[in-house]
Image (cartoon, rainbow, N blue to C red; front, side, top):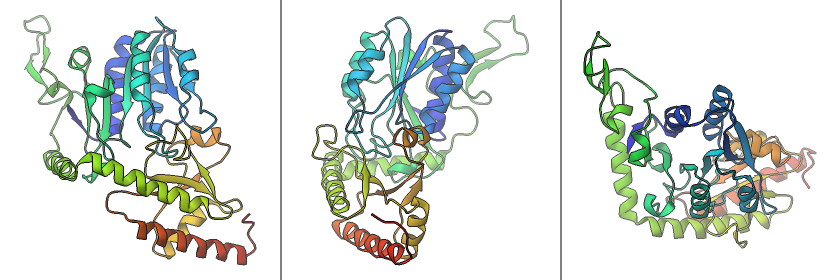
Length: 339
C-alpha cells in the first residue's frame, strides 16, 4: 500500500509510473464514459504523450456499465490497461469488477480500479476483486482530506518509476553517475513512491477511520446503505416531475447500488435547487460532479445529487423529500416550469 495525497495522486501514479513504461504508440486504453475526471484526465494525458488510443465503454440501456460493449472493445496485444470505477459517483451502479478483471487479464492487459465510492461503503477484498491497482481517498471514508492510497500488485509496483522524487526514497545518492551503486538507487516499494515528508497525522487519522468502519462491520454498512438508498430512490420516484439517473434498484444492473441518487427537475437548474434547499437546512451536491462526459452522454449539463452514509436515517430522507417538495412549490409559484 502506497500512501498518497489522495486518489487523484494515486491514479496519476499508475498512469505515469506504469503507463509511461508499458504503453506505446498505437496501444489502447479502455475507460468508461462514467469516469470521474480524476480517472479520466491522467489517461488522456498518457494517450497524448504516447500516441495511444482511448476507447470508452458506453452506458447500457439502464444507464449502467455496458459489459457487452466492453467485451467488443478488448483488443489482445493492443489493449494495455483498463481503468474504471467500482461504483459510479453519479449513477450509483456497482460495476461488475470481477468479470471486468477476468476479461481484462484474458486480453493480456491490467486493470486499474477507482474504488473511492466502494471502499467506504462495502466490503472490498483486493484478492477477490482481481484488479491490479486500486485507488481510494481518505475523506470519503470518515478520514481527513489530503490522504489516500494506492494498492498494487507488488510485481507491477516494482516495475514503476516514482511520480515524485526527492528526499527519503533512496538508498544511495551520489554525484558520480558512474560509481556503483547507481547515483540514484531507490528504496523498495512502497517507500520509493512516498517522497518528502509523509503526512503522518493524516495517515494516523485514516487508520482510525478504517478501524472505526471495520468495527461497524462493512457487510452491515453495505446492507444498511442499500436499504436506505432504495428508500431514497423510491421516495424520489414518487414525486411528480423528478427525473432520476442510474439503474433502478429493482433492476439487475441496480442490485446493491450505492446510497446516492442523482436527479433533475425540468425547468429548474440543479444549482438553484441546491441553493434553496440549503436555505432549508438540507445539503446536497449540484453540478457535473467531476463527470462532464457522463452528463453529456445523458444529454444534460449537470444534476443534483442526494447522498447518504452510515450516519443517515430514514428520517433524514423524509425530511429531505419534505423540503424538496416545499422548494419545488416555491419554484412553481414563481412561474418556473416544473413538470
